[in-house]
Image (cartoon, rainbow, N blue to C red; front, side, top):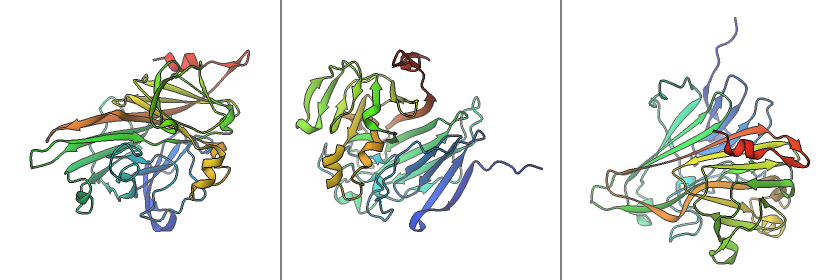
Length: 314
């Protein structure tokens, strides 16, 4: 008799940190650490890794894990007065033992709900009460879905404001052979030029030097095409109007202690985000933001891929 499928498995990860493994029947899997509420692995049915994690990251709190999908809350990067990227990625999250089920139309079983609430230590720098519920799920076709619900639970009548990003590190074969479609002709803030505003001129985004841009008013679908692997990542998002694109390139990589000198070649950060216009919640109000990534084969035709089909199919 075949063994019953284990969709959710709790176990010890690196340095004794607790992690959860999600598995889908077709063979896709994901790994999530309670430290940071962070996805650190997403593999396809062939066991190929789709996310990048630096070999130099220590998995030792309070240092953030370099790679996977860190959660940037309540601040993205240095867009505010808090520590870079906020504190959610440096906190231990709680696993909800009885998460509410998916809608009756879905038979999804490979999912978890993580919860983060305000702590004494945080109130010194960010004096607010909140509940952050993060659902991480693997769809039946292996899609990786993250849904965040953030609620203002202040009892003093005060609103709070935050910026947010799913800081997604995709694993790519060679970043110089990657192109992003769906962000052309859009305005962006260039973090390498003091957040100055420009308009994207190319018909697609390609990489030959350091890039750190926040694209504004972006579409709900973005295609990231890895020519070498003949694979396209399709990123869908909801409630997150911006998209951050980052690669440190060679010089910056050497200055980042927990990143290997050549790691930039195999990583590309494309992040569903809300940066330009911060979110404000009154007491009792809730915000929801969602990101879904799928990995599909790409096909060539006269040197061009077929991502339009991917990008505009519904």
